[in-house]
Length: 420
Ligand code: PLP
Image (cartoon, rainbow, N blue to C red; front, side, top):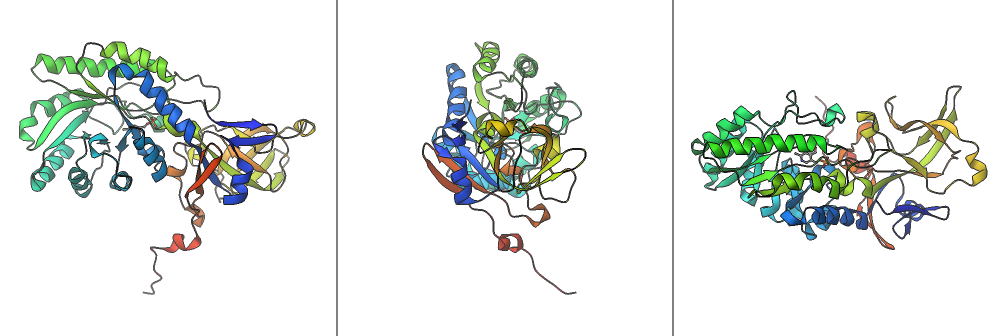
C-alpha cells in the first residue's frame, strides 16, 4: 500500500504531480509520501497494540531530518548505528529514552556521546565492546543499560549482504558468549545488562525465520531464568520485507499474529526496529531520460540518476519497478523493447533496471524508480563527483523540499589543494 499512482496519464504522489515536482526541483529527485510513512507506522502499532511495543525507526534506512521528525512526532523512537545518526537524532530532539544503538564498531567517542544524551539501550555486539562501554560509563559517572545482541544462527532467506543472523556473520554474539556476559554483569561496572536483541536480516518476506529466531531467543531467556537471571526487554529488530516485484511479504498483522502468541504471558518489554517497512514504498526516485541508445542486443535508456543515487540495483542486484511519469499512449505501448535503464556513471554496474520490456522513452521524458524510500538516499554517494539528489516530502496537495540538491562547492568543501 502506498500513495503513488496514475491519475489519468499522470503519475502522482498523493495529490501532487511528480512531473510538477521534477520541473520545480529538478532531477534526480527523491519524492516521499508522508501519508504512506504514517500509514505503515500505524499499521505496525495497531498490529502489536496488545503489547504496546517501543517502535524504533531504523535511521539507516532513511535519515532525512524531516522524516525522523515525522516519525518521532508520531511516537516512534529511533534505532541508530553511528555517532552521525545520534547527531541527527539530537537535531530533531528525539526522546533519548526511545533510542537504541546497535553497531559492531562503536567508538569510545560515540559511546560517550550516546551516554551523555541518555539513550535507552546500547545493543552490545561483543564482550570487548561491553568493556569499553563500562569504562566510558565509569569515566562519565553515569549508569547505562544494554541489551545483548545474540546471533541466533537463523537463515532469513534474503540476499546474503543483508543477512545478519547466521553463524558466519559479524553481528551479535553466540549464546554461550551472551550467557557469560549476563553471568559477569557485576564485573562491568555501571552497566545493567537488561535485555536481548536480535536482528536477523532485511527484506525478509516470510514469518518463519522471524519465528525461528524468536523461539531461539525465548529459549535462551528461559535458560537464563533457570539460572536466576531475569531478562526484562526483548528487541526483535527490523527486517520486514516489502513488495518490490511480485513478493507477497507478510503484512504487519500477519507478522504480529505469528509473534504475539509466543510472547503471551511473558513480562517482556518489546522493541521493534523497522526501517524498510516504514519508508521503503513511501519513496520514489524521479529521473530524466538523457539519451536513448539502441544496440543490436538491447536498448539503453540513459537517465540522469545513477548508482550513486540509488545503489541497491548495483549492490544487491535489487529489482525496482520503473514507470514513466506520463503513461505512454496506447499506440506507444506496442513498441515495448528490451531495455536497461542506466545512469551516467563510468561503471558497467551502473544500472537501475535491467532487461525490462519497456515502452519507448524519448529524450527529456521522466520516469520513476519505485520503492526507493529505504536505503536509497541514505546509501547515496558523490561517486564520479556527482552532487547528491534533492529530496521532497509530499503531504496531500503540498510538497516541501526537505533536502536541497548539492552544489558543486559541496563536493569541495573539505578539500585543500596542496603542493608538496
Ligand atoms: N535493526 C538493525 C540492527 C539493523 O541492522 C537494521 C538494518 O540493517 C534494521 C534494524 C532495519 O532493518 P529493516 O530496514 O530491514 O527493517
